[in-house]
Image (cartoon, rainbow, N blue to C red; front, side, top):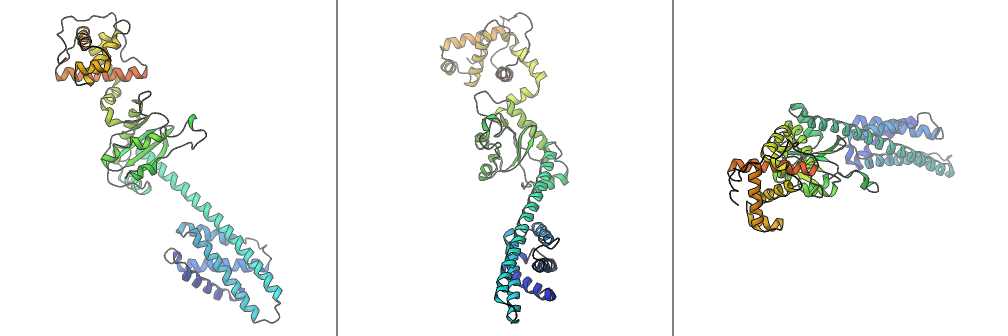
Length: 407
């Protein structure tokens, strides 16, 4: 058979192409013929040498690597080796029939040897193919991580990077996008379960594509979908949250992904103890504004509620809770009283006290906006256990301010 190797190769190539269409569009015919010839030669040489030929398995390793790179399914590659074993066996049987001196026992021994070698070749192919796939996936993951890291670093304005991101991260080229940042499934609570939670499937079921990486010690995800889908992903992320997780507002350009990451991390800082772990920035924009400008926020707080903060005991917290509730209830003393579990007149008296101590009215759009932002800063700082402004001497309440408007 080694003397007629080209004829045997032709039969094997024809059989493979007839039985498996995966080769037709993926492997050039000369490549297929060359690998068939080399593998046939190694099997036949192995049969002659009793399976101990040096470099016996080089051919199946090289074939497996090429087929994995060409995208031929492993099942098809293994089937080709089974076909090769059949072609060799059929050829040996045909030769034995024309040689009366070949005993039946020799044919049976040859059959066992042929299929033992084919099994060794097939096992080698499977191992080499899987290693090649794994190495390729590792390389692809490194490339994806590098591209995603570049976007998160704010380099999405580079057209070449943006094009690579769309291809490698399998994201749509059209915005909007959003960024998620925070601990999703890691930590002490998960030692006996999956250590990391990657919510791609849940998001994709809602039409949101995503790419994930580790960044700054926690998972960071780049999301792409419709605007309505991106502003309602908190419920999909909550089952995986193991701490404060922030979601940015949608952005309209990959160049703004770096800014979106900063937004997501800022949103995570606004999570309330005992509250929902996933914070959507759009739902907490006022808190985000006052948190992101600490110097100006401190100035606003000192000017607006500084005198109230310097009141003795718990009076400051009672008064600030009252005016905050009054604003939350649409400036309704009645609804505020229900929420605070006190009488309506108590609310009105507290509001008058607020005006007298702070020196600021409780009516007019600008005054109300200042109150809202100052109280937002106070609430955020109060939850975090940090002062928003340092005490600056004894209270100097102004008694000349007028009463609470709208109360």
